[in-house]
Structures are given as C-alpha cells and as structure tokens.
Length: 339
Image 1 (tube, one colour):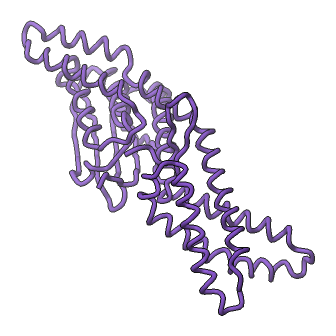
Image 2: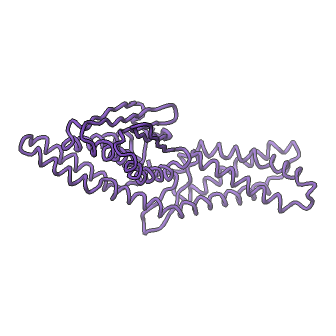
Image 3: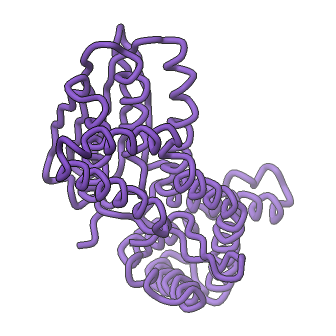
C-alpha cells in the first residue's frame, strides 16, 4: 500500500501528485471547511443588503450542505477505485462523482422550488477544482518534508554506536558460539537491508515487529541478561499497514536510554493491541537519568510524530509520559490492511 495522504514520487525530482485519501479524517475536515468557506465568501460577494444576508446564507446552506455531505460520502466509498486510476483520470473521476451527486440532489430539490441544473453544476465543478488544487499544492509543499523524514529514517535511526557494538558483540561470541555469531551477522544484514529499501510504501506491522526482534537479538549479544523484553502482542493487529522503520527506532531509544546506561537488568515492555478501528502501541522503559533521558528522546519522538502526521494526518497520535521511574511512548494508529 502506498502512502495515500501525502504521496511523493521520485521521478525527475518533481511532485506528480495523487488524489487525497478521502477516508482520512483530516482530508474530510479540510474538504468541509474549504467548501463551506468558499460558499460563505460567495454569499458575502452576492449580498447587497445586510438585512437579507441571513436568509441568503440559509438558502445557500440548503443548496450546498446536502450535496457536499453526499459527495464526501460517495468519495469515501469510491476512494479505492479512484486512487487506482492514473492521476489525471482520478481527477476526472472525482469531478464526475461530484457532478453526479449534484444532478441527483437538484432533481430532488426541484419540487421545492430550487430548479435549474446548469448553474449548480458549474459552481460545483469550480469548487471541486479549487479543493483538488489545494490538496495538490499542499502535497507539493510537503514533499520536501516527507523526503527529509525518509532520509532521517534511512540514515539516523540506527546509530553508529549500535553498528560498532553489534560487531563487537558478534566478535565476542565468534569463537565460543560460531553459529550465534553467524546469526548475528544475518540479523545485522536484515536491519540494513530494511534501511536501504524504498520507504514510500506502508508495510505490515508484523514485518516491523520481526525487524524489532532482530534488533533486540543483536542487543542481547552485548547486554545479555541485562536486557529483558516483555511483549504483549495482539495477533489481530499484525496485518495493519504502518510506516516503515517507525517502531524499531523507538525500541532502540528505550534500550539506549533505559537499559544501556545501567549496571543491572532492566525491562522494556512493548504492548501492541487492536481496539476496533485503531491499533494501540505502547513502549515503556526504565528512566535512569531523567534529564538526559528527556533530552535524548525528544529528537527521536519528534521525528516519529512528524512521520505519523505525514502518513495519517489527524488519524494518528503519539504521546509520551514519564511517571516515577518509567518512560512510556503511546501511539494510536488507524487500522488499515491490504484486504
């Protein structure tokens, strides 16, 4: 599944554009606000007497709100087939859906005295063009931001010290346990293979979990029994499509700040659960140095939060909480799957 909210194409360094995700809460809210804003401006321009403004706006609301809500509902239902079309055909298909809804609504309103179809069709087409232009310009403006977020995911998530420590861990068991050393090198190769993949595609959460397990196996080579990991995993969430390389950096942060600086054992808890249309992820680790931990976590958490906003808009959230000697990161994602 491709990034639907703000997709960017790499070809020739330009933004080719795709349709907005008509099932995204942020997209729906923006459509409602844009159309109503345009209608309000149009009503103010047409008004010649302030005394009549209230009645004129009420009449306009009757003509606008009904087709607007039906158009949003129709685009919600037709989102998948529309987004499978090439961008120009998708634009044409979106316009056709809006015009079809307007024709149906006008036929229903005709007995109430709201006759005429050509004028509503014209203004509906103009409004749809304005809304689609807004989303195209918004996507083009955010393309560099997403490119930077992908670059950070590729270059900054596995720290140089981790590579150095992982190789030392492999060397430490090379003579005593050659088979484990070989597995460690394979796990390290899998991690870097994931880093080098194109991160414009959403991936199953199960793949991210496997990547985290490989990372944790590498950390156990040097931390041994000091690293305890407790998984609470809901298999119903495995199929959920998530941004690539968003879970492993948070787990790495938990190990880096919560386990590595200490002399004794520590526990990292990872909760993954599906609750209706949402997936909840919570990562908790001990706090050994509160001031250093807070400063060190801010950059990683801000980066993941930015990536979630780019992928899901208002449908995802990331919150952090420090209570006593525990630090928690909570993530809420919409459940999406390839089915």
